[in-house]
Image 1 (cartoon, rainbow over the protein chains, first blue to last red):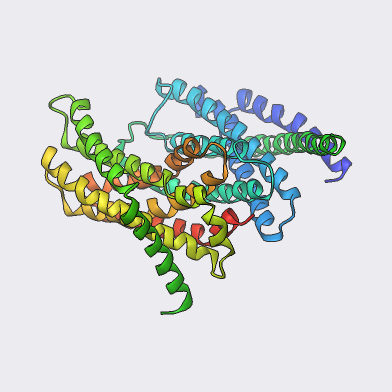
Image 2: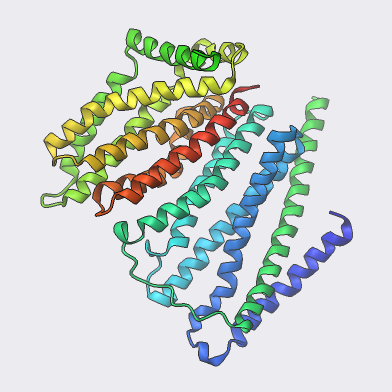
Length: 224
Length: 213
């Protein structure tokens, strides 16, 4: 990514995200009542961004296995790192939403939350795997294969939670969200674009930091 | 027999033969699963439903599998045999398939004791439960073997295997428990079959990357 594009991403994140949240907070059409619904403009973009990060992580992992270029390792790792952060934020915002909408901090009937809990546990183990394996090609490939397992687990778990639906955990709360009107959809898109820009910015910063770390370590080994 | 199938058969035979001679893993799995079922009896307050008992059986199966999987690559690691296997002129995925067949055999043998013991201690088995256990074994063995190979390359080994394994088998537990207790087990059995197929293909394709240096 060129410097100007990177700056644009920062700018987009800085402008669009607060704009979306403010619009969501103050410009919701009156008829759509439910005040707790406002967190929709934060929660759903964060969740989708987390999926996006996991997807990018798996894509880079696939490229690593396919091409054998080692730079993809750090890129995959950084994307998954971002995904875990956004995944945790999804759990937190979802929990807050559940509290205000239904009066409970956690509901096993809320499929997206359950799915994110599974993914959060799964990707947290990614770090355990990474840090307990010695650096080298073996670690890079193991991490990459694990990342690919992750994107496979997303639809499989989604399906499992869906068919389990009523039998294992009765769905007590239904998601009777307001119908998507064009206003809601527009605000949602603004928020989503802002969130993606924020994720891209964080990704660039984190990746640059990790690259510097890696080069510094190499340099130190050379000097030692 | 073609080359690939012969390789797989030889590798699976090696594992079974090793176990037959050393009796390292299987007796431990058998003892563990019966102990676990005994503990579950005391963990369930009297008057607990049969559904709760069935759920605990699935936990016993998952943890017994973990016990076996932690030892899956122990022999190879201790004797440095994995390097030899990787260097052997056969497709690396054959190593995974042979090992998976061995692990599945251990699991089936452990359950051949666990399921009758469960029926004796708790309540009679349904055919759906047995079918679900059989399908779950395949998925557990496929994924577990690959993760065990990954864990063998790390320093944490036995510590990290359950951390990676449990989130991945949550869908198996959902499918298995669903098939055991729901009124229409067909969709859950179908889901277990789908899970097995998807992850078996993924493990088969990616095992080579996990074992090569």
